[in-house]
Image (tube, rainbow, N blue to C red; front, side):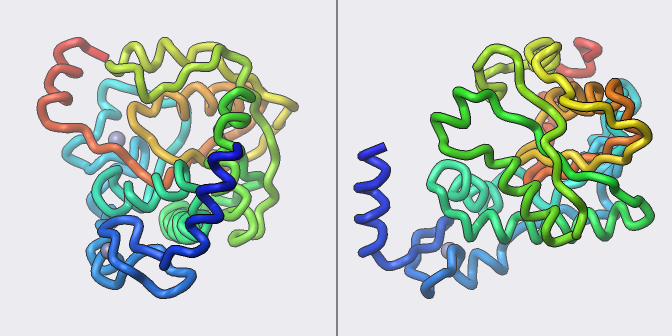
Length: 244
Ligand SMILES: [Zn+2]
Ligand SMILES: [Zn+2]
């Protein structure tokens, strides 16, 4: 905590820098013009609206998720990843504003005909929130709720053990790791819910959380994440071989 305060004080005297290339930028900015122009967005026509992957990598044939769709503005790579990490690990909240705006745009465009009753987020374990000081998915969900005028609600709690999903390798293990880790906090009879997270990798967490929301009575669950990890060609082959 003390370290964090000292760092914040030191940062206040440093000129703001681009979170990706490190060039000096104007006050209040977090990306230089070059990096902003180079940001790679996912083209909506090229991706599967259900699993969120590029159409040629779609996994819907052999994996049925409990949610009805997942969209993300950016691929988990390069500049978009730098922006997300600057928010998540360096408390750059102006980056969160930008990500939330892009996520809201994505939702408006791709879930055009869907009327959401509520926005919620993937909850973080209490120990994780204590460590970081905030749940990044909740920050994004609250901002999207403000932009879109859809009420935010804490609909889920994390009751499982505290260990992070990103250290777990292998799709099957990721799905096993989240089983029973979340519970719904109230009945959601007939509601259509927008579920927010920062990054979708295997989709295991979103799948488990959506399952709990549906179990609590939600009618449909759609997801939006800031980043989407694309499957590397090699990985996809081994996944198919294991039949996950
Ligand atoms: Zn830059
Ligand atoms: Zn798909």
